[in-house]
Amino acid sequence: MIPMKDAETELTPLEEDCTGDVDRMLFEAVGRLRLALESGLKDQGNINLTEYNVLLHLAEQEDGSMRLGDLARTLIFSPSRLSYQIRSLEKRGLLERQRSAEDGRGAHAVITDAGRQVLRDCEQTYSRVVSILLCELVNKEEARVLHRVLKRLNQSLSINTLTSLARL
Image (cartoon, rainbow, N blue to C red; front, side, top):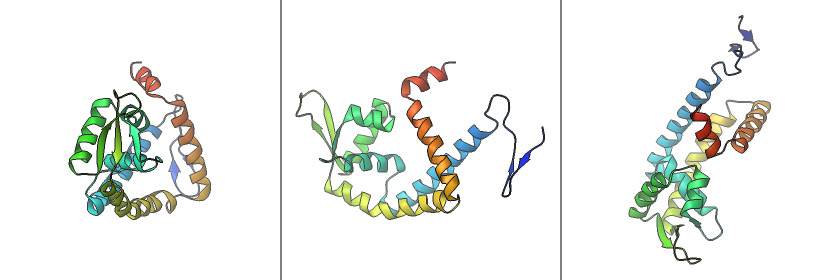
């Protein structure tokens, strides 16, 4: 097959199975983005991207808290992975674990003032890295297409779907 070309880059044709090397490029791009974000967040707030996302989701809640099961589903984490992150953030005073007032059985993670301050400290770094990597390196039409594709992927893939696909 002859590689297709556009004005800016050489593209290899997609194979009959529609994947070509899109999967590799996606994983590598996500990995590089993650490394850039991790580095900036460590320098600025001494947290990693996973911890940043936990704090961000809590801060976005009206009362600054989420039930742990809901937080795990939102972040696409196993309960054990979330427990590890919660313990780490709790030890540093960035969140607290509280018994559920609703039923007394479940637990909530609640962001603390210190956790909110770390988010504020890291916000500019996070925004700057994302802006450089995702806004300055792609044009508006590419960004719209990327948004549509990623939105569709996220909407159609659930943990059950991913687990089922992995077993094929």
